[in-house]
Image 1 (cartoon, rainbow, N blue to C red):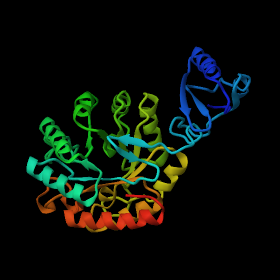
Image 2 (image 1 turned 45 degrees about the horizontal axis):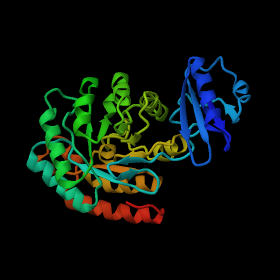
Image 3 (image 1 turned 135 degrees about the vertical axis):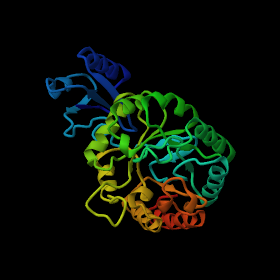
Image 4 (image 1 turned 90 degrees about the vertical axis):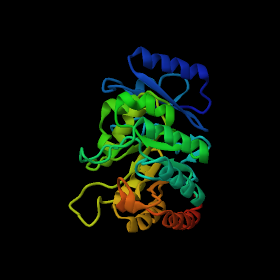
Length: 337
C-alpha cells in the first residue's frame, strides 16, 4: 500500500501515521520528493483498508500497489532515483560508462585496462576478483589479491570500482575494497546474498538472471530495498533463448519497460548480451537510444590472452570508438556521457 501525504502535511502528521503503521506490525518506508512525501506500507497488507488511512491528518490518498513489488515501484517513488558513487551520478541526465576486464589477471593487465578506459571516458572501473564459472576448471579469479589490486587501481586512476560478490560471507570483505557490489546473473535469486548486500549501504549492480523475467528481476531488487539499501541499479545483460547466433539475446525491450515500472537506474551490458566483440558497439548504441542510464562494457588490453570472456572484450581503441558514438546518441536525447 502507498499513502500519499498532502503538500502541507507536517512532520507531526507524518510521524503519527508512521507510528500507527508500525504499531500494526508493518514497516513504513518514506520517500520524500520535491512536492510531497509518500509512505510505503510494507508487509502482508491484505487485511488493511486504504480508506482507514485516509482519515489521518495530512493524508491526500491511500491506495494499493497493483504490482507485487512495492519499494521499486513508481507508485511509491515517482521520481527517478539518482545514485551518487564517489562523485559519479548514475541516473537522470547523466549516462556513465563502466568498463574494464572481465577478471583481474595481474597488476599490469588491470592497470593497463584502467588507464585505457579512463582515457576514453569511462567513469567507473569494472573487474572481477571472484568469478563464478560454468566449469569448475575455468579461472575462478584471484580473490583477496584481486581485491587489493582493484583498490590500488582505483586509487591510481580515480575511478570508482565495480566487482562481483558471490557469497553472503564475502559481502563485508568485498565492500571494504569496492565501491559497487555486483550481483551476477547466476546469483540474481540468491536471496541470502540479496539480503546481505541489502544490509550494506553500498551501491548494488543487480544483473538479470539469464532465464529470469523482468518482474523477477524487480522482485530481486525488492529484497535489497526491503533491507534498507536504496542504492540499487538494475542491469539488462541478455537472456537465454533458442537463438544460438549470439551468446545471449539482449532484451532491449527491458530497458524502457524497467524505466516505466521502476524508479531505479537501468544499466545495459552489451558484452554479455551478445558474447561477440563486434556486436558490442551496435547493441550499446541501441541501449542508449532505448533510455539506458549507463553501460557496462568488458575491455581488455589483449583479448586473445584473456583468462575469461576474451571473445566479447573490446580492445581499448574499439572501446574509445564506442564511447564517441554513444556520446552522439546521448546528445540527441539531451543527455550526457
